[in-house]
Image (cartoon, rainbow, N blue to C red; front, side):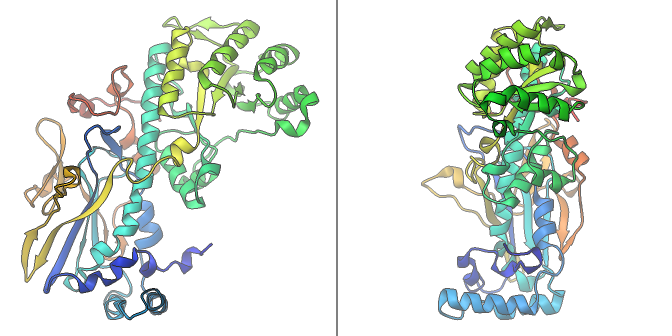
Length: 488
């Protein structure tokens, strides 16, 4: 794997962009482009969580990213690739000489963690020096990779809405919401960087994960779940479970209990042979039983009935059943946005509160997504030629949804409370929600995890039974006004 210090920014683009500097009209001095998650009729999500730009800027764009060595490396590589001399060696050397290898680019962006309706500008990019107009779209390839952390953060927040709705309905409160969904996706992603960036995107919304790369990314503390049961052998399954209780007397401990027969394990081991040991634990050191196979809803209903039979239950303030506080269940197999809602609906119909459950999610959270999940796009909307500005756009007759915005853009909240994009340079600077975060190689604005989480937290309407992030005819006005406190 290439070390970070060996990364060559000049090679981090689509090869067709290498010749773009030759293709622009004569006398171009400014290229201005933007990123959005296009609104698409019938789309599954109508709003997104903006997250991840700060990382990309720090990792790849900030500081001295152009050196003579990297220019020569790129020159040799592109000569081999194209079999002809098309690399703009002179242009890149000007960046090195004039700006000491720092990029003469300005990026304005929505604050990290902000919830923005689909179809709005999320960040803009423009060159700050007329000699380097070609740089704006050279970095498109890298910046479009923003699709990944935005999509993960958005889907994670959708899980949170579903959990909040059921938790509120079946317990009367949202206590513990931020630990209800555990990230199990580390082994299912394509790279360490995906694990780190996707894992961190999940931690914008929740505080629980097994993805160490994501934890390191945000330097966030956690408690590890253990799964080492089969190494003991089938005949010593009870000994394996008892060992875990001995090894972890304090703090919650989650135990995979379906290595052989989840129902027998719950009935005869946890609910009989180790029953007293389980009952000795407290709410802060709860045993969390983990089924990990079979139909999730059917398995959970059967498991929770067995545990009720063996350990009893009580009713909460809104009339739903709750297992003793020292006993909970975590379901991590087969979890996505549809199945988690189905499971919670079926359990509530059986009279069980969502308090009893935690969930884990792997590939559906970090891997089963792509750039088209939120229709992420980066398009040019404004250029200057011979000192004169011109709004530019695309409007393909074969797909109107791919039409792009025109001119210089700003993002504002209008008098009705809606967030909207103002095109053609008509926006007022004092209303613009876009913040200059990067200019001429320097990061100008950074956000803490606490600030990002605060911006992304749920609103009261998100916990209502009718609230889903799907296209409908309702307004977002109330969504902008009423914030839900105490989630983090």
